[in-house]
Length: 59
Image (cartoon, rainbow, N blue to C red; front, side, top):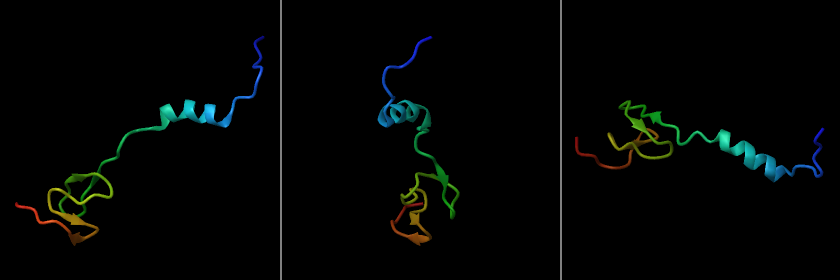
């Protein structure tokens, strides 16, 4: 039976598991206009961030 000669390091295990963990950037919906937005960014459709108007957008 095959037996490993050395203990697998924490870094080696974490690198192997990280490939299955990453799912990309999650898209949320803007609470005011329901447009899809990237988290922690102002909405491109309405210009709001955290309920405040931060950029002016032509509609």
